[in-house]
Structure formats: C-alpha cells, structure tokens
Image 1 (tube, rainbow, N blue to C red):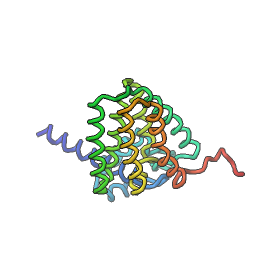
Image 2 (cartoon, rainbow, N blue to C red):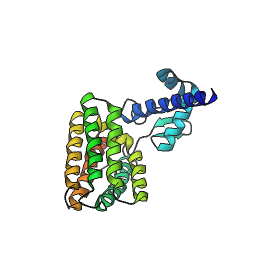
Image 3 (cartoon, rainbow, N blue to C red):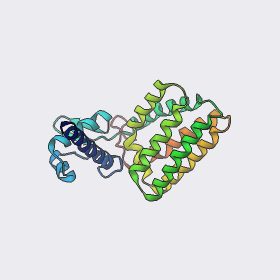
Image 4 (cartoon, helix red, strand yellow):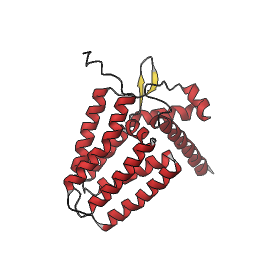
Length: 227
C-alpha cells in the first residue's frame, strides 16, 4: 500500500511539472510572467506543495527564475543572451554532426525513420506535447551516433536551455512543416558521405526558432544602449 501511495504522489507531481512546463514552452505563460503559487494552484487544481516543487524543478532546468522581491517568473532572455546561447549550441551541434560516421548504420536510419513517422503523426493530430517529445527524441538519437557521450550530454543541456525559445515554433504550422522536411533531409544525408552538408543542415535547422524568439519575445539588452 505504501509503495502505491508513493508512486501515485510521484505521478501527480510529474503531471503538475508537465503542465506548467507545457504552458511555458508553448507560450501560454509568456516570458516574464509572474508565477504566483495561489494562481497556479487554482489553474491546475494542485496543492501548494506540488506547485512549489514544480517551480523548484523548472528553476533547475532554467526556464523559471526567482528574484528577490519579485518571486518566480517565466525566464526571459535578452537579445545578447539568446545569441550567446545559440552560438554555443550551434558549435556543439556542428561538431557532433561532423563526427557521425557516414554512411550511417542501417539501425540508426531505421530508428530515425520510426521516430520521424511518429513526429508526423503527432503533427497531423496537432498534439503539441507529442511533437515536442518526438522532436527531441529525433535529435538525441541522431547526435548519439557521434560516439561521444559527453558531447551529447552537453547538447542535451543546451537543448533544455533553449526549450522556451524553440518549442513555441513547433506549434506554428509552417515552422513545423519545415522541421519535418529538414528531418527527412537529415535522414537522406545519413545515407551519403557528406558530413559537412549534414552539419550545416543541423545548424540551419535551429535558425528559424532562434529568429522567431528574437522577433517575438526577447527583451532588449540594457547594455546595448540606443542608436
């Protein structure tokens, strides 16, 4: 009985984390929005304990921040921060793609084709969480083929850091269709010998979400001054 109760509480906690995370990454709670515990308790029908633990978890992932006299807010990024974060992510992505042995193993191509088929099905249904999860699974499987687990771990860290910037773009129909087409092109390039073309495509794959975030929600950098 005790084990079942613990598992149930863990599942409930995970569900609250998932719902808060989704509202943030898909823009329902925009950058800079205050995350007031009482409001979140009412929004999700959750206890204060579960809401508070969800905010702690999301603070650790980097998409929630706490400030003195302000409390918890959805993290927003300055223009400079977005560019700096993507500079690092692009370097890691390019290096991982260059290290993938080509032509790739049939097992990798089969795995990516399976994930891609799921990605397309979620896109057709408009299932945002499914779209997000299969998109990440595709890239983790792809870059896992580079053979360096430390590089892959660093890439995953930056995928998490850019989560609020990139996931919203997957909710856009046109952006999603471009993403699907580029995934197909990546799979095709894995059958050839051109690592440079593969790495360039993987980097270009990130540009639309970066540009979209900068245009929509990035806050001005106070250090840049005015022209």
